[in-house]
Each structure stands twice: as structure tokens, then as C-alpha cells.
Length: 443
Ligand code: AMO
Image (cartoon, rainbow, N blue to C red):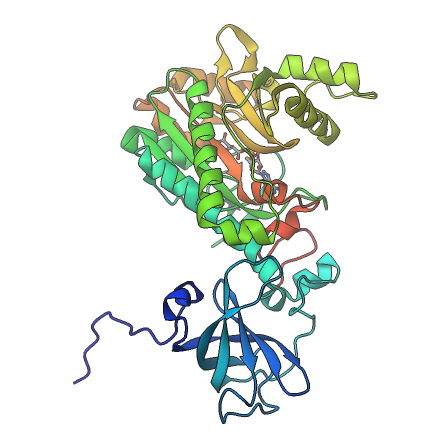
């Protein structure tokens, strides 16, 4: 009888072990990324999970001969001798002198877009139409490897701070953020809503675990086609109890971002190098009140009409201002107006016109909203009524307040927004693996 032991024998040598095998024969499994044939030899680039391995074919190395079925995008098992490779900058690289190629699969057709060049040279919409193929390009896939690093850093840091990871439902009885950008769904004859955020649930879990976090998709029915909005994005949320002030949340986020950036510099160095990413140095993050930031904008920019919120150009200006004044890529803007923040936000007891809330700007764009929440039952019911909401519809949410909740707060950080600005993209779709927008639900 065959028994499964949980052990998979290694049949492919990773590039990171080539140095240890210098002069020896090894076998590597991967996809043939690029073939450059010369008169009597050829370079074959083999794409593995994270590397491009140069393999050199020459009739001098063995009796094996190249054949036409060995084409780009074939899955292959290449056996060869590890040798040092000449590099322009003198850095240490290794290549394989091919002894044999065994094909494991062959593609039915050639890719619709050239993916074997240094980068994809086509319009964003074409790139997105062929995403399962264009993501194979090393620069494209590096974007999402870095995105993995951001999520990993977020998770690692919060776990180190005793947060519990949760998963809240995405089919909900009410929108959590108000506004019109909520998707309605027919649920066996009832109207329900796709989660705009895990807000109501992460708060409910504070009296249970004190500190919780979630990394998950959320849905926003954005009716406009903008370069910074998606209809589905990954929200990295946390919520923490027993805070003394909403600055505790900002401190937690600052610590978390420091950890993320350090992790990217160390564990994701190949992708950071490939995409020439300018990883920000964070020592501390300056803070400015909304009112003071608005005054700065009014002084420096013309035609500002909305005094209750920021236009994108104001955020861009504040980003430059923080860089000049504090040499910081980040800026916390605090104390947003009460009428512009959601129903769960705590007003400032010293000035109820403003809230104990903040946004974090990164290189001039909002990547986070957060703040302290109302934990008192009567205060929450009052605020809902003031905003024209029916507290009865939020009975299950209000159990949090009714049956006792500590002072608490948290934040939501948009993963694609952070990735977009870290990598210097002009459009958030470059930072979404399979973006959903008003015109796109495929692939
Ligand atoms: P908010 O609605 O401001 O706050 O969202 C938090 C962060 O999510 C990102 N974001 C988006 N990213 C891409 N496309 C969108 N359509 C989009 N909308 C928002 C931004 C934004 O800063 N519950 C609160 C958070 C909290 O207080 O805990 C919330 O969701 O980066």
C-alpha cells in the first residue's frame, strides 16, 4: 500500500544553492522564458519562482541537441553544470552549461503579448486583458511579490504586538461606511450589502480579543473611473482596545510601517532592486491638524472651495510640504471635521466639531483612515440619530456598546494604494493583480 508521509523529495536545485554546487551537475525545473540562438550556441533563460537562470547551450557541452519543440513558455527540466558567469559589473553570478533538456509541457500557442523582454511594452488595458500571461514578466510579478511583503510585514508586526487575526463576513446586513458606494445584492429575496470594510466586526471583536487585525478584500461601488479607486481592494485593518489616546493607533501604524519597510529591504531585496524602488526611511512621522493643513493649502494653492475635505492636489501639496519641512514621505493629518467622518468616529470632547481621527498621507496621497471610536452606547445611538440613521437597523452592531466596550480605535490601510505609491505608479490598477473597476470584471 502506498503511504503518504508529507515529504516531497527535492528534484530541482534553487538558484540560491548554485554557489554550493559550483562545477557540479544539477537539475532545475522551470519555464523557458527566453531563447536567444546564435550560430553555434544559444542562451536559454529559465524562469523559476523568483529567478531567471541563464543556461547556455553548446554542442561542446554534451551530445544533447536543441530541437524546435523547445519553445518559450515550455515547462522544462534542465540538467547542466554550474559555472560562474561573466557580468558587466563584476558581480557574482552563476549559469548552467546545458547537458540535457526534458520538456514537461509545451504551450499550444505563442503569448499574445511579448513577455520575455525586460518589461511589458503595451497599454495598461492590454496588460490587464492578458494578466495571466503578462504577470509572468519578471518586473510585473515583482510588483506582487513586494505586495506580498507588505502584507507579511503587516501581519508579522501585529502578531508580535499580540493582535489576533480575524475574518469578518463579506455579505452584510448594512454598509459599514455610509455613503452611496455600497454594492447591493439579492440574498434569497432580501437586500444585503457587500462589505465596504470590516469596521462593524473588528470593533465587535475588541471586547473579545482586545487587539484584532484582518487582511481581506472589501468592495466599494465607485461610480467614477479614477486613477486611485478600485471597486474591490485589499484592506489591511486593525482595531485595538484600551487605548489612552488615538495617538496609540498612529504609533502602532508607524511601528508597523517601519517593520514593513525593513522587511522589504532585506527579504525582498531582489524585487526592490529590479524595480528600483525608493523605500522610505521612517524614524518618526510628523502630524498636523486638519484645520492647520487646510490653512497651509489655502495660502499656497488657488481655487480651493471645499473647506471640509481635501482635493487630490491639496494632498499632493501637503506631501511635498512634509518632505521639505520634515524630510518625511509620510504625514498624519488629524482632527478631521465631525460631519465628514463616519458615524462610529469619536468626536473630540474639547471641540465636538472635530473628531479624534486621522488620515495618513504617503507621498501626497491618502493611504490610511483611522481614529478612536465611540464606545458609549448612548453616545453612539445619539450620533446615529443625528446623522439620520436608524439605530434599530444596527442592533447587532450596538451589542458592542450596550454590553460594554473599552476605549478603542483602529485603522484601514489600502494595500494597492500603498503599493502604488511605493512603486511610483500613476494608476492604482498597476498595483492590483486582477483589478475590478467600473469597466472591468475580467480576467
Ligand atoms: P476608508 O474608507 O477611508 O476608511 O478606507 C481606508 C483606506 O482604504 C483605501 N481605499 C481604497 N483603495 C482603493 N480603492 C478604493 N475605492 C478605496 N477606498 C478606500 C485607502 C483608504 O485610506 N473603516 C475605515 C477605516 C478605519 O477607520 O478603520 C475605512 O474603511 O487607502
